[in-house]
Image 1: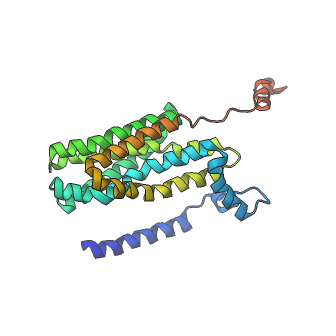
Image 2 (image 1 turned 180 degrees about the vertical axis):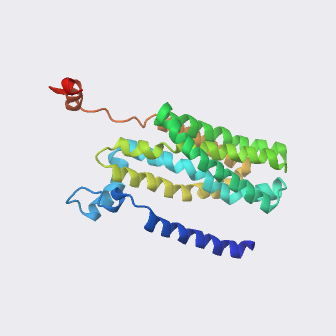
Image 3 (image 1 turned 135 degrees about the vertical axis):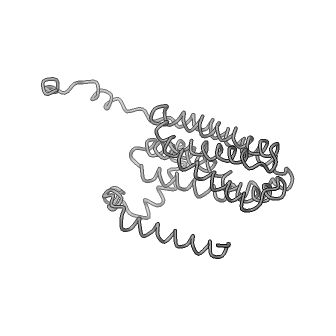
Length: 259
């Protein structure tokens, strides 16, 4: 199709996705107001920003979310040149590798949702996401450098990175649970982190690719992933207050007979 027609085709896909969301996604909760009654829109917007420092755990979660896809957006800046000029892949081969990375990520998004429910949201994000991405980031560089322009090893390595990138999926469930009374603001902070990653990733590449090269940038991203794993340990769910624990501990009269 060529690059120009591909852009037009992509626009068509975006429009189709919008039409599907408007006409076929009939989820009642999202169609109504989520903010508490009487809360003004401007106050809600400001609260979505201030919760980052009002609730340090939410702020930490936003930073973790920023690190999550920072490397992904940074890779798009310099890996095409690395794969085509240094390793010797064609542009078409690189695009197929990129497609494999995201296809694997989509599948493992579902898998890590299940893993998070069994293994724990926090531990899944820390180990499968943070530590996993740190390891696969370095493998992606050193493994492809050792294999050269061999497509099969490169396919495995980019797929491994895409898989571990999905290890951060439980963060979407963990964040609103950290602020049960302000779930909308917590999700806004999560989205803020996601948006910030589109700037942070290319900024890291822009600042360090020149002096440190591809190897140095890959180590920086690996270090950021390890830092996010440590920060995730701070994202503990709030303990229920004493009144809630007392209520839960005292059985309701007559409930035993009904059961």
